Image 1 (cartoon, helix red, strand yellow):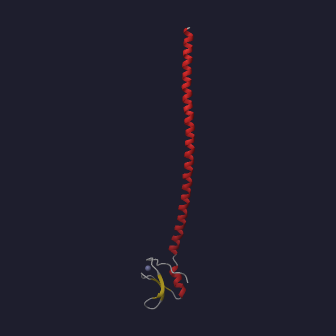
Image 2 (cartoon, rainbow, N blue to C red):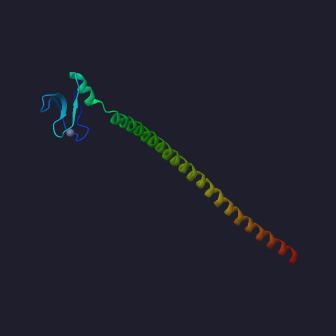
Image 3 (cartoon, helix red, strand yellow):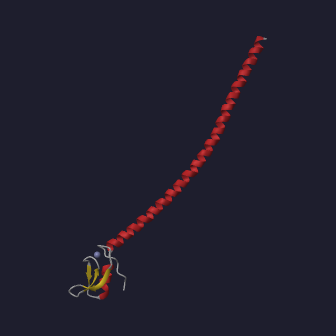
Length: 126
Ligand SMILES: [Zn+2]
């Protein structure tokens, strides 16, 4: 015999027994929920048959799987963002080095142009 599920209405335990008129049934120990049938095992089967509950459990399971899938995708996305940020930091660092070198080269060029101008001026004045 299958184990009886909890009462679908109050969530408490159920038992096989007889009602006040001595009809065999499965009944909730706490509320008035009852299932009757002609043969002994069918009432248990009927008591335990919960199509809406089963469907909701199925949907819940599918939803939970979807949540896990999204969490995995989110974790992958976070990891990829971290990789790209590290890559960007490296590129920016390289860019800073090149920019500093370009600024220094520009300063040196200005110095050389000034020196050339001074040399040309002193040559002209001679
Ligand atoms: Zn109940």
